[in-house]
Image 1 (spheres, rainbow, N blue to C red):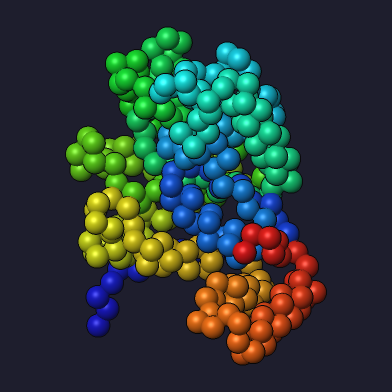
Image 2 (cartoon, helix red, strand yellow):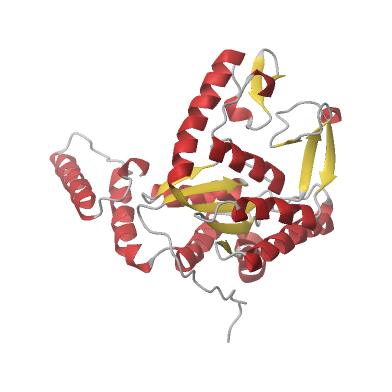
Length: 315
């Protein structure tokens, strides 16, 4: 007897391998899955501007990464007391001077631009159809940076508009493979019905784009959590974010969907090495631990020789 509705997922024809550049953009779900991927030694960059939630913010950040256009004085806003940021970044990029901020964000942009150019895979996790527009210029912001709510207008992005922005990214970059997901994180500000409407618009937009372009694919993270796991024990105490167990479950599904099966021995070897790297000894001055360190270092060297495309610095 089967007590679970399993989501049937057709694996990709082209699959991710060590050595492929990956870029993860979107909601904190992109952080979660991208972090696991990076931690296994894949060449992955995750949300270089901070989390993104709506299709316009994703498209704007994607274009900036592609062009590498530096941030200028006009991009800077004053936030807090003597703090500066931009509407393209989250609060992690706040700085105490405008010049220091521009140096920080442009150095980060230059590194992210270089990574974008070599990336084969773009994984995008969309969170919501709602956008915030800055009243001064009508521009959609990626993050309100704790400014007063009255400075923004909140608008719902229709499915047709989301489709247009996603299409622009995919159609103009045929050399990239795009994997779209709709984040299973629930946005409850508008109630459960409002959340469903927001997610539905995203699902319809992604479905349109994936039906039009061979380099656009959909991974059903949203359906896996809501329909396959389907239990509040897979949510954290806030009843919004999935638990670590749920994220791991979805990651295992992503492996079968997108990762080349030939990479599994390397992934297993990396996982074993990570356990050794994170081991905390009870007696660090003992002979037994010194022997353990020698074994760990030897395993590290062997892994580098066997699988040279693994980015060991990401472990």
